[in-house]
Image (cartoon, rainbow, N blue to C red):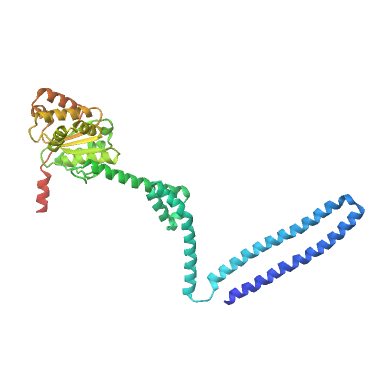
Length: 360
């Protein structure tokens, strides 16, 4: 045994011997004196006997409580001395000390893990797996443990909320099937020759037009970035919590025609009507048939003042009436689309040509 620990034990034994012996002698003296006093008092005043007995018992119990308190303090002092001596002045191989400390820390960690395990199971049962993982990670960071309860709880809630938002956004984008999945409002550039107003895009980025069920018309020559802008606005709507759907006009009409043939036409119209943002890309590229005009009118009628719509086209809106050919249907479609619509006219050369020239 190291000399420091042995010295501490000697001191402890001496103090324990003094504490154990001295109070017994004192109690014996006091008990003898109190017995004589009780006997004398009982002879002279029999009615005061119970009072003297209670006083004697009180002294005896008080001595026992003092001894118990002294014992507790003595044990605390011994624990501090042993800890200080073991950590600061204990002699022995450093590897053994490190091994003992590591074993102690491992035991404490295992105890904490056992206490946290029921809570972790409850969090998993409530489908709060990210919060459970974040809580487990907090236990291994001293900086995080030093924070207050409110701050740590806010971090857990933020982690769970962010994970759920990312999962929801992933599902919304997968459902939307955007032509350019990486398109975003932040990725739109504004060269002078494009004549694209940054303020308009910033205003549309608030998605107030989705809330107010409005229409956005994006026109321009081929390669000017109409599809990118339309997908960027739809992606922004998904980030704001709305649902979107992207369709090229030609495939959109094919889908409606097949639904009409297999009897799922009403269900398809109902599903499209529930979508918050419908993007119809490359409208008026090819001649439109009679059934396609009626299908387009049905879709726009369901969405008028109820859902938002984005239409991109190379054909300027003032020529849509002639393109639709049927005056009656053309009037109905243009009346629901062109009035009070946000119009974005993109100009400049084809961006595809610029990309190809830069690559070469």
